[in-house]
Length: 336
Image (tube, rainbow, N blue to C red; front, side, top):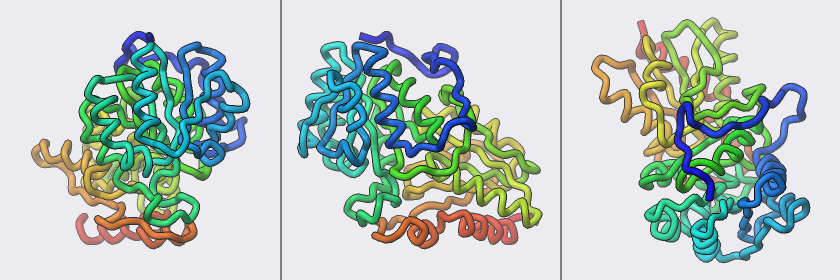
């Protein structure tokens, strides 16, 4: 069994930093398959379990390159998580491949009782998360997974910005104690980082502005928020951008340091504003006297809808242009 690891200076090594600029941008689902296939040959404790979605989550890469470490459990998500729990008790490190809607919603009781309560080291991928799921519609769009997993005692919750950070998290998760939820997106996004670092040190400053307005984002929404920050800069409005890769345990002190001196904080997430990033930031800021004003961009207590990615982003106010427009409005209303 792997030794228990915690966040901070004792975090597991990620190996040599990746040179992101020299590698083609990959989707996070491709990163999942490729990274786990590599890990299966590097370590004898890695096993990948799939819920009959391998060609979508790209767990089929593991099946092809490391068949000894691949188990097809079929369309039976509750059983899938139960099997993973059993394997974890035998000293293995199971990674589960399925959609976020099936992992977090359909198998929630198994996660809670058989994995989280005994604090077993099962790592599960929430693939096809958020609203950009290939026009699958609201039944397959999971926009409250971060809120549900944040509320689960002992759960680590990770949301990488791009392919580089996704690989870092997938590798580090193997040596983190207890269950880990990794929120992964279907399609490739603009690369935000050029090297892999362990994100347990806290929020990462992506862009530095004049300090008055801080945008805070997580997951692949950070790439679109970065574009929004660039649009605002072109209009003469200089904003900072802070990326939060670890939703739980959230380093509150590091987040407060990253937001120190701000007059307006705007959280941006491809998720409901209830209980996710916006909720987490609100919780931390509410405990501080005289903190900045806070506004939250995300789904406003609604389910997703079916449609093309660009149309959905625009509809829910998450496209770069819509984020920039909302920030401009709040700056005009709230700041002198």
